[in-house]
Length: 252
Ligand code: BV8
Ligand code: ZN
Image (cartoon, rainbow, N blue to C red; front, side, top):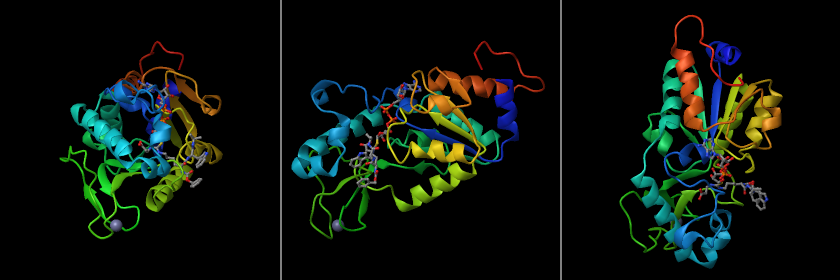
């Protein structure tokens, strides 16, 4: 941990990339764990596609409304809050998130790059119309005022490209990072997972925080095989202690 904290304090460009695992401790199911209740017979990856929305818009719409209500009932956890604290205490910390739940912003993290869009808004697939969905709990799908077609959640579905600005900002951040944290992601979805590889190619020190191994574990310089809130709070504790750093009981 000593060397990592030394890196943290010396780093000029720190990047955090988060996945569904950081929201798991807020009660939001991760993307690949089996769904529950009326959604248990569906796989998230099958519902989060333009084809699914085309085929059964109401089914996909209800799934998103269900997720929105779940998110609204939950709040950021200590893992989200720790990233905000690190961003406030250290210079130049960039957060890229694959999550669409908005919990990082709610935790006070600034300039969040939403790599897969956000669930708060609806957008039109045919024009630039976007509208907020926050207080709409209806099962009636809103229509685009310009095109008179179904609006859809303002997220990036499988088979859709990453929004240009999010993609550009993320690639720039990853290529300039000297310290890159991959937090709570199975590192299976591309191009997001490729950002770790891009950082690595540019000689960044890679830290993975995930209770389970992923395809990125083998290229990580430091691995915290524990929940995000535990690992990030340990880093905060050791970071904010003055002078010499305490020994932590971990393999780091
Ligand atoms: C693209 C928004 C170019 C929606 C998401 C065939 C056709 C088309 C494309 C493809 C194809 N084959 C492959 C692709 C590319 C595809 C892809 O990568 N597929 C994968 C499945 C192989 N990618 C795309 O389609 C992307 N676009 O490539 O465009 C293109 C265009 C046209 C045609 C071809 C290519 C777009 C991908 C974006 C999809 N949208 N979300 C919504 O949310 O509804 S992705 C979705 O997965 C979520 O955003 C999620 O964040 C993301 C990644 O998953 P994870 O976050 O990693 O979540 P997961 O559940 O997997 O893992 C959770 C982890 O947390 C676990 O490791 C667990 O151990 C850990 N954990 C659990 N608890 C904790 C914890 N960690 C820490 N603390 C804890 N407490
Ligand atoms: Zn439209």
